[in-house]
Image 1 (spheres, rainbow, N blue to C red):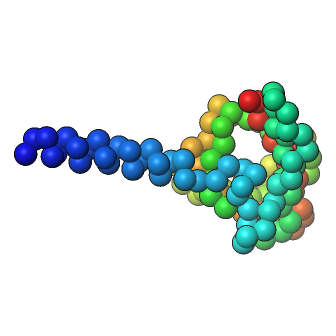
Image 2: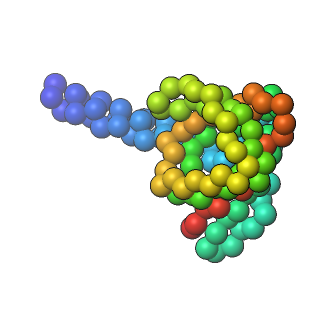
Amino acid sequence: MKFKYCVFICFGIVLNCNHKTSLPDPLEAGWNNQAVCDVLEDNEKLRTLKCTFPPNVGHERHYHDTHFGYTLQGGTFRITDTTGTREVTIPTGYSFYNEKVEWHEVLNIGDNTAVFLIMEPK
């Protein structure tokens, strides 16, 4: 009986790990089956994405590994992540760095098209 319990717990851990990796990365994620990011550079050391969000367009739930971002054109977004949902205005010229983002999803709720560069070291 104890053995079956242990196998069940181990199997549950495997399922949890698979669930985390089942989310798309930022390039794979889109909005309503349409891509929002394009690859500007992809070499052995760096991948750079340009992600464009017209009004009422977002980025479906996805994860990020380590990355640096820069806002080419700012905007107002509704962001949902592990901390909840909030509305933020991201200015043009804003930069950010994250070691990892377990998951988030965003929606451009502003009036203008927002554009970001995302640089991911390999």
